[in-house]
Length: 181
Image (cartoon, rainbow, N blue to C red; front, side, top):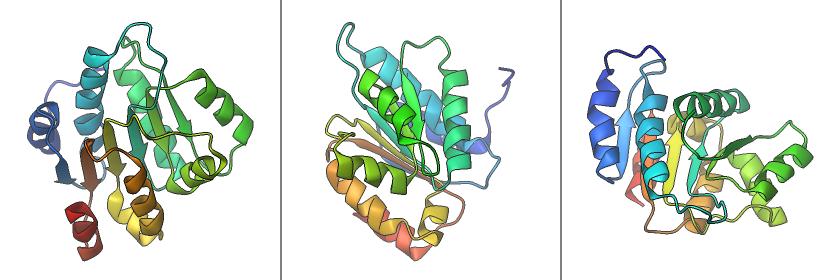
């Protein structure tokens, strides 16, 4: 797709993510954070996939807005064009039926806004017990938008053994508190 040189956040984050470390990455919007988490995630999921196994949510990516959720999902589809992984995006303000259909078919990667994910959790249409990677993109904006209680609830539903990647443009005290938990 034309990338020739990794950005600073990619140079720092990709090796740590590939090694399976939890990560708190700070970088401004437009610095390549999506590739910094998506490329290692796609590598991990594609190299550990079990042929013929039913699809289950192995990676959950939370974003604060539907626009960012769509953008992240589009990037994952571009980067993972040749990977045999299924992904979908769910967010509020869109019909539930297409989202339910995609979830029923099974996905490896779910990109979601916290509010819509909570809706699906309450309906029992999403299970997070198989999540291997939890990625929070623009965590500071989720704090500003009041999503912290939802994020804390979601974090309690994914396995403790997951790899967690937080990406944020700023580092408010509340973000540090959540990352320490």
